Image (cartoon, rainbow, N blue to C red; front, side, top):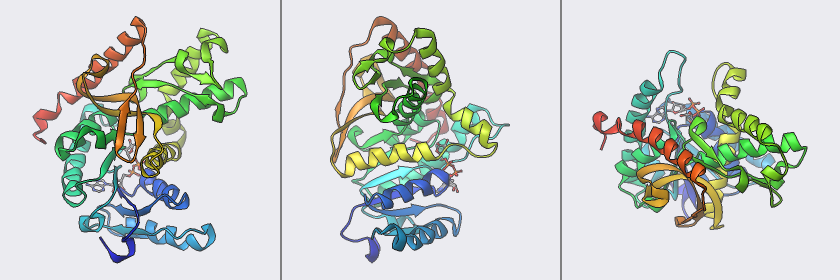
Length: 318
Ligand code: APR
């Protein structure tokens, strides 16, 4: 670890693209940790780091950001966030994306774990649930230290649409979303509340279904508007919330994709479940009482994730 980073908590962000650089900004400006940004593109992480450092005098914090191509610079990091990957282009199938990003995420994980063997790893690269599983397998870490950011984002999107519909504050909405990321998510409206009032008491079922549809399509809706690139403000906010829960030992209950070993009847798979996050990573897995219908939806989401995960052994990555 370089001299500049010594003595303070460090988050390593692998991939200094849109999500990685926005996340770096959120972490230092919230005074959560120092940041090392690593990217294969020469100059990119160094440029982002210098830009963020130049904002320090105005933003009034004294956190350090460094940019690098060298894994030795992330040595001893407390958290490693993996955003490295290729975006899905229109000519690419989901399967092709999986193959490309699996190669990248496996190699990045191998390099990172060698330098930061005690870190907690957070996956951001898509397809999220599969990449989380891959990081777990390749790193050999205990499952408490491996998680994927998806549930916080899906729940935030759902909460936003609920708040917009009810003209309520998004801060008062707590959304419960389980299962795989994006179109595989399994929202649970009766555990979604506005200041404790369950959503089905506030909106008719058809309206809730429309909001859920928009949430499932959340990433794609933004992609269509942006034309090039994909969402990064809400994704980076979501990772920052997880980082804060861990570094500040806040024991927050948040949905995250984690390796399941029999919980909810699902084994050897990563998927979104509410967990309690603190300094040691996943401190507890929250068990919800699900109806038969909800449980069926969760298992069908799990089967879709499993179909993707089953492609991994053929790639020979672990
Ligand atoms: N090592 C390090 N960095 C890499 C590697 C690698 N092997 N391969 C690619 N990268 C870097 C790219 O150079 C790029 O800067 O990862 C970065 C990805 O950034 P963007 O393309 O801007 O993607 P972003 O919008 O940040 O999304 C990152 O999060 O939400 C998901 O689907 C999204 O998988 C994507 C990820």
